[in-house]
Image 1 (tube, rainbow, N blue to C red):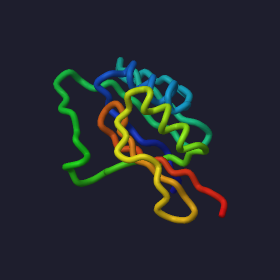
Image 2 (cartoon, rainbow, N blue to C red):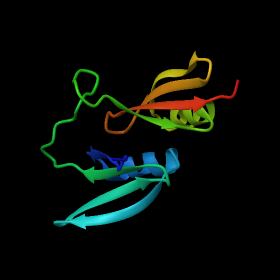
Image 3 (cartoon, helix red, strand yellow):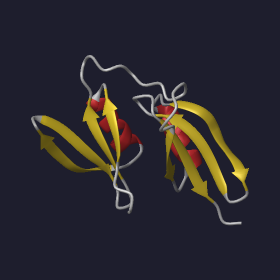
Image 4 (tube, one colour):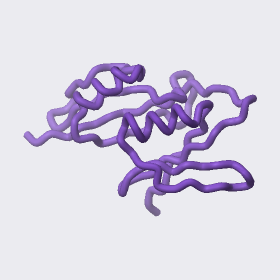
Length: 125
């Protein structure tokens, strides 16, 4: 087996595409129409996220009080610069970058649909 993609159901497709593409810097890799519904695959050469527009009757998930999938983690080159850019964009930052281990910096942020995203920057010692 190997990793394929992570799926996110959004209540605001435009906002989610802006966040993942314009703010995080990913690209729309594919747009697929399945049974009259659009699915957008964003990512890079390492991973993909499928973004699907939710239904008006859908309930917002709150990962902080549910068991199961808790967060996704992205390796980044400049965690301090990215967190600053996310803050400028109004993204919820759970904690500023900190160094929990000698080989990495980490931060947690929240995506536009409540999803938790861990950012990790590895450092050379």
